[in-house]
Structure formats: structure tokens, C-alpha cells
Image (cartoon, rainbow, N blue to C red; front, side, top):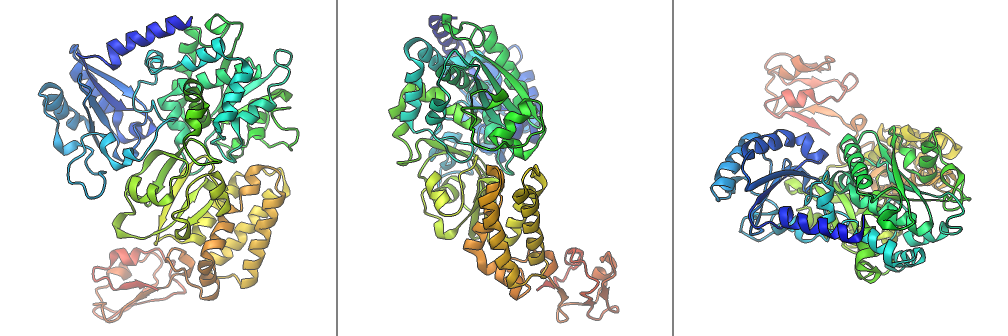
Length: 619
């Protein structure tokens, strides 16, 4: 394929599909979030209704963004008016088809009108009108929810593979690397290492040494789904970027390491690779040049440690996924002991736009040391959950109160966890700190891959730290003693604290051990495992002390520290709680106040659910 052939495809698709003046486009979100919510029957119903109607086109798309409102259907009329329908069912789809697609009148009851900017009375007819979307700046997610991810022509119509063509025909490999250096793009998967610098380290001896390009799609952080959404909604962006990197460092082969639990992403990646090969955008002599590059998939089996770059490469080689000591770094000796660069999905998704628009364009966004945008998976105690892409430097307050729509049920914000098990908790004290790599590290957290879990006043921060530590203990590969043994000892102390059996000496030991593990574990995952403990100790030490000194959980979460009591002034002696108690911990006679024996009570809460008088109290 030549560049002019690419442009011909672009013009045809723009004319026939994306910018047609005759056809109404109907997009159904069929990423994992949509599929899980029932979007497939919606798609089938709309396809059935539109069969034979040449003026209505129904197609799938990736994650549209505001996942809690799935299934989502977007209608784009020939005059480019967009309407977003949320929580669509097959029955609603039929009404939308009859009243809007055939009758021309949008169905007001199903519109995305519940995520408007505060203070506005009008109903939002499309996602772009909502505060959830207006505050975002989409680069990595630019095509998610806009194109059919299984149609390479639609990717080409949005300037797809133009960046690869530009790099191969008008830039030298060193020009590409310099562009990446000048852009300031840092790796979006964890520590934020400069992407261009990593490429530069691997660029020596082009043509004389076998080199590899790897994509880390082994997204393992609890609450994170950014990479999955890109792979499901815009897989060609990753393929194009990896080919550009191969040209820059002199590699001819790339591997995408994707977790096997992502079947939709895997399917769309396979389709995308086959399509790119068929058009000559992967394979031999791309764009008629002497550059050849191919990509293959490797499926991970769910080991969290394989998100660490050397463990990932070890797994691709067919060995047990364990990290290797560094140095040597992968840019010198990586996959199959050859020079290798590895970036995560979101990093790759930024690269075609940087090559097309220039380094200055990307560097103009963000902060001094953290350029561009960052995708977050917004979840937890928040009104608007889903994927958000914001400029670096946006504050946590803006993300939670504006984009996220605030905390549900009038509760107060307490903390936000970023970076998953490797990250830390951000307290209300840092609500207005601009989010970037350096600021997050300074306050005891980290960017990580981009999970952002919001917690309110009902969360116990000691319990939260224990939850992430339990995950890390389960996922430790066991290769080094600080991680294999140290994290388990940390968890034992945390369990003593949450069960009311710890002393203040244990708290000192907890902090000392966490610091030791952070300094001495072999890989980045082991080194960051204590972060949830250290950050909660830093900002919520008073909660630890309450668990230890007062034997109380201020949030009422830690079961072993709860005491169930029946208020004798409210209890009418109906005996319902007594009959429902699974362990016979409640005593009393009919029509007289009952009591709970704390020695027998297992704190299951059945009595609270059973009592119609609300006489059972937790103290």
C-alpha cells in the first residue's frame, strides 16, 4: 500500500459512512461494559429493525465512556446532530427506532440528561453536552465510542496509519525519537519513565541486532480498565504506534501481552492484526519502504506480577513470570536477551497523534514535567463512573466534584486511591493538588496505570489498606524475601489491628517493616506493595490508633470491633431477631426486651435486617 491508497480509503469512508449527508448512523457501545449490561440484544434488535433500510446504518463501537449508563446507543443524523440514549433495553430500542429514527422525534425519557453541569436546567441530548464529557480532553480515547473497532477503513478515515506513513516516508528513525523526547510523553503504565528516552536507549545498532517492541496489556490493578477500553475501541492505534516504534529503534517484531480475561479485546486485536496485514500495513516493505514489522499476541494467565516489564518478557519467553534484576535494563537486554522497549496500551495510543501533530502540540498540554493527558478509570463512591481523560494538572476536586458529579447520598469525600495496590490514598488535605506524576509521588501516592477509586466517610482506611495488601500477598511471585515474607508479615499485623488485638508497638513495627520492603524488594511491584499502608498511616494514623487504643473502628467496618446491642427502650419483644439469628446469640421472652450475648454473636447483621423496630444498634 502507498500513502495515496490510504488517502483514497479515507475519502471513501468519510463520504460513504462517517460524514454522509443521507444516512443516519446508530452506534451501540459494545465494549465489555456494554456487553455485560445487555448491549448485545439491543444491537440485535436495532439491526433487525434497520434491515433493508438504506438510510439507517447500525454498527458497534467501543466504550463510550460513562459506563454506569450502559447499554448506550448514540444516534447521529445526516446533519451531524448527535443524541445519546442510556440504559437502553431491546424494548426501549424499538421505541427509539420508531419515534426517533423513523419519526424524527428524540425520545426524551431515555436521554443522557442526568449528568449535566450543576445549575443547568436543560436536558443534555448527547454526551458531549454533559459536564462528564466537557471537562475531558481525549487523545488516547479519541476514537473510542466513535468508530467501529473491527473496521480498519473507519480507523483510516480518522487519519489512521497516516502517522506511520509520515514516519516511514519523511522522517528518519532519529527524527521519530527526537519527536518523542520533545513531546515529553511519559509512560502511562506506572513510574512514568520518559518514552523517548527509553526508545533512545534501545536504538543503537539498528539493522545489526534483533530487537523487539512489546505492549503491556496485562492490566491487573483492581478497578482499572483503561487499557481494555482502548484495545476494544481502537486497536489499530496500538498497532500503528508499535510499528512506528519498531522503525525508530530498528525492530522487526512486536508482541502484545494481553490478559486472557479480556476476550473481547483479544478478538478485536486479532481482527485488527489480520486487517493490517491484508492491507500491507504490517508485514514486509510497509508503504513500499525497506521497513518490515510484524506483531503477534501472547496471552497472560492473570498473574499480577506479569505487569512488571521483566516478568512480562520472561512470560512471553515461555517461562514462569518472575522479575529479573536490573541492570541490565530491557533496552539493553530484554526479550530473548535482545534490546527491547515496552510501553503500556495508553502510552502507545498517544503516539500516532504526537507524530501527526508534532511534539509541541502534545507538550503544550499538561504541566512542566507531566505533559499531555491521562486516562483514569473512575469508580467507587462517585455518581458518574467510567473512563475519563483529563489534562495533567487537573485537580482531584475537579475530577470528583465536576466530572464525577460528586459523592452519592450526600456523603463526604474521604480519600481516593490511585495506582491500585502499588499506589496510595489521597486525603482531603490534597484535594486541590494538581494531578501529575511528581505531585502524586510527593503526597505518598503514584499515577500507576490510572485506576481512581473514590471513598467516602463510610470507608475504613485501615480496612482499605488491608484489602490492597491482601491482593499483593496473593499475587507475589515469591522470588524475593522482602515481598514473599515481608508483605505476609505486614498483613498479619494489619489483621491484628482490625481484630482489636494489636498494640502501639505493632504500629511501630508495621511502619518499620513497610519501609524496609519498599527499599529492598526486587521489583517495582514489591517495592510499591507497602504504599497503601504507608499512605494511610501518613494521613489516617488516627484511625489506626482508634483501632488499637479504643478497640473501635470509627467507620464501623471492621467486624471484629463491632458490638451489637438491642436497645431495651425500643425493643417490643417480638422475637423476630431471635428466630433469625443463625447462632442463637439472642435471648429473651416474648413481649419483653431481648439481649445479644457478645460472646456468641458473629456480627453477621441478620438481626438488624430482621428487626422492624430498628432496635438493634451497632456500637
